[in-house]
Amino acid sequence: MALPGDDARPAQPRRLELWLPILIVAVDQLSKAMIRANVPLHTSVTIIPGFLEFTHVRNTGAAFGILNYADFPFKTAVIAVIAAAALIGVGMYAASLAHHQLIARIGLALIIGGAAGNLLDRVITGSVVDFVDVYWRSYHFWAFNVADSAITVGVAIMIFDMLDVRDRSSSPMKASDASNTD
Image 1 (cartoon, rainbow, N blue to C red):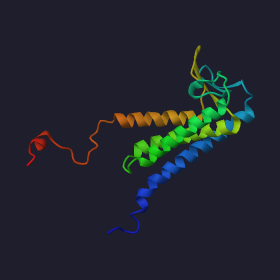
Image 2 (tube, rainbow, N blue to C red):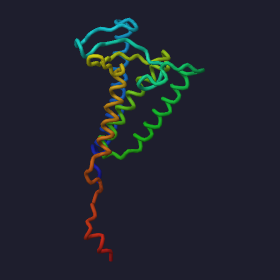
Image 3 (cartoon, rainbow, N blue to C red):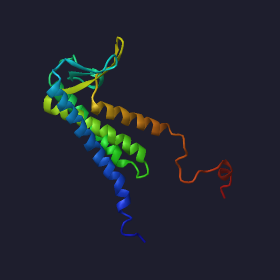
Image 4 (cartoon, rainbow, N blue to C red):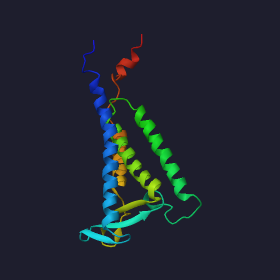
């Protein structure tokens, strides 16, 4: 017999999967608005000398600046449609996960929030604002933003979850059990 509060417990992790992407989009969009308002395009503000700057750049391409310098008809629309299709696919996969797969669902929520934040930029302005510029001496990593960070952490969580070697079956079968099939 189910108690009145029993069906509220399984919904709680689902709320996390809803609020985490919303939080990521909000923080991402707020940080990008602050950069647009305070750091002129193609200029930098040193945060940690010799390691970190906020450099206002625009990415009109895909991840890591791929296609940034390519020019073809409807480029913004094509990239936005591909990004939206990927976001829908990830969302459908996330919705199909079992309740006990919390780690995977959190990873996917991070990916969804980051992808939605960048897609919002593409649809509204035609490009994504990147600003976190990490470097060491002459080596610079690609500039990125909060959404990119969420996607990266989400993918890392998904990889670690897939590499987890714990037995995930509810009742593991021993070799001696397999030979006793009467």
